[in-house]
Length: 490
View 1: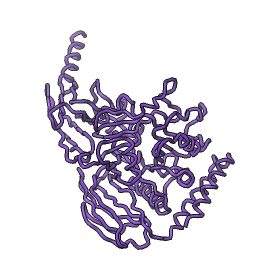
View 2 (view 1 turned 90 degrees about the vertical axis):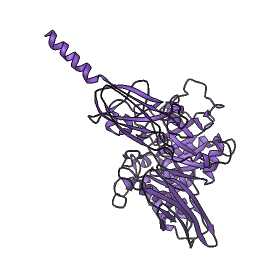
View 3 (view 1 turned 180 degrees about the vertical axis):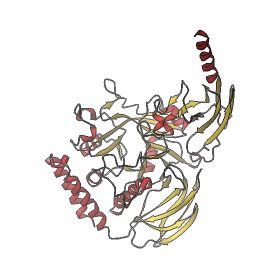
View 4 (view 1 turned 30 degrees about the vertical axis):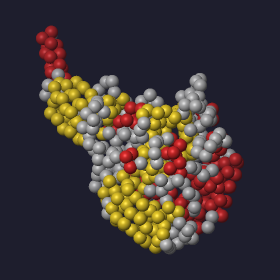
């Protein structure tokens, strides 16, 4: 019996008697922050100790991303002998390394992801407007993903990380380095009507006090989200903050917000677009017509169609991007905005560039682009840079594709009666759509947009008929005011 137990112990030791060490360096040869996946011979993902994990044990069944982790300079892990696949990523502007190695006793691998693009050197600074990771982890995450700016949410429904503490009103912007910054005074009101993200609050709104105990947050519709937005905007000092980013356009109360408390930006590359797939439903938002917008790509096309309708109606709101890392299976900065800045970075300058349309959103391709109106024409050029094959680029005007190109091209088309134009590019991917999109260039055309107005009138009629509105006269009155606005637009 003792001999059998001894044999079992020896066998167990033999099974795990191997070590995999991976070292990652930057272009200067020094240890670099990176994100890793370790795929074992049995298909499972392994995570060593002492690292920043992207998800808890077992979460990788939802997405390989949740089995990844972040570390500086690499890692060392005890494993059973076999063939391992190691993925190393350092953000969008670096190559993604997939390295397969046979581990027998001890295997040491040194890898250096090559930077294939340097947008910052061209004046473009990247940002993610929707980060739900612990504040102490964010500096390392921004470094690992080569993301210049992250808006970290410290107040979200029942959560207020400042509760019982002094709110850092004079320390909301945190400098990590000359090239990495974060803000921590951001709140998200996410309840029945939708999700409204309020950046750089001068003081907390006490969102947690408006959600009754024992009730799911998506069942709480009152007070209407617009009331919290208005309370936030009462704090306004200067031209920029608080900033209202409407998280995504599929939420039921989005047309109400657009009409009565127009946001500063609206999510286009939003958190349903994930690195390894698409959250292919509207959560508790307004369901899309899946016959018109089928499959995972339908989520993106539905999103684009809604923004196009708002732009048709004259809402001059730039598109934004956010990954919601910490809630959805995305790394920080998977969905990101690039903003063109002259000179040194500042948070104010970044938001100002976003407001002025010196930006583009992406979760894959990088753009060099020019778009202008001249002499009755829409003209310009585009060039796509990407790690994956480019499917093509398109010039969209008033929601209609008016010119198609490959990965690069120049164009000149009649402006006609178009009200706006923008560029978009897609990669040839299978598991999830990856694309880039510029903000709209608004034009002087007088195209008939009454159909878009009717679309949102019908939407609000559906909203008014929902139990939340039927049971509360205040919501019905609010929704009625928004409906009247769309009935007036021509």
